Image 1 (cartoon, helix red, strand yellow):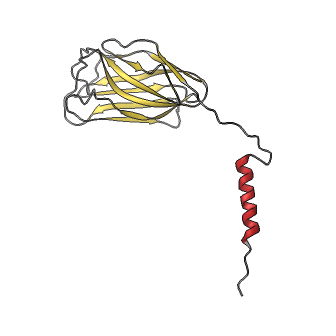
Image 2 (image 1 turned 180 degrees about the vertical axis):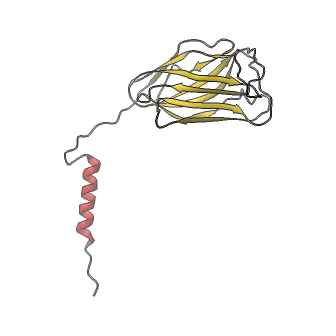
Image 3 (image 1 turned 90 degrees about the horizontal axis):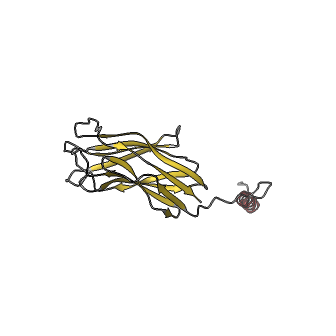
Amino acid sequence: MTPTRHPGPARRLAAGALLALLTGCGGGEKTAPTVVQALLCQADTPVAANQVGFECPASSLGNLLITVVIGGPSTATDIYGVQFDLVFDSTVLAFQIESGLQPFLEKEGGTAQVLTSIDGSDPDRLVAAISLLGNVGGVQVTGSKEKVAGLLFRGLNPGTTTVRFENGRLVDSALNPIASIAFTGTLVVDVQ
C-alpha cells in the first residue's frame, strides 16, 4: 500500500518561509539598495601631443564611458600596442566591459583587440592591453588626438574616486617600448 501524500501544508509552509525571507520579516532589517543618480567626471589635464590620457563626459547617469586617447601628431610612427593599469576605488566604481575598440589601431587595415581583467585580489586595478594582431606595422597619430579604447564603468555607491594610470607603456611592431609617448593626467569621478 502506497502512503498518501499531503503536499498542501508543506507547500504553504515553504512558501511562507520564502516570503518571509524575501520581505525581510523574521527580525531582519530592510535596507534600501543604493541608487546612483549621476556620475560627474572631470579630466585634470587636456591631452597634448605624445601623451596618453583620458576623456569622459562631464556627467552621465548610471554608467560612465572613460575613453583612453593619444594626443598627436605623434613622433612615433609604429604604434602597435598600448598597455596600462587603471587604478580606482572599487567601492565607488565597478568596471563593466570594454565598450569597443576605437578605430585608431585599425586605421591602416590591421585587426586589433582589447583585453581587460580585474584580479580578485586587487579589485581597485583594471589591467588593459590594446594591440594589433599579427605581423603588421603599427600606426601613427596624425590628428590632434586618436581614441584608443572605451571602458565602461558603473557607479556603485556615492563617493569620489580618482582614476589614474599605472604601468603604462606603448610598444612598436617589434614589441620594443616607445619612450617618446608618456601617460599623463587623472580623472576625478563623483558618484551621486
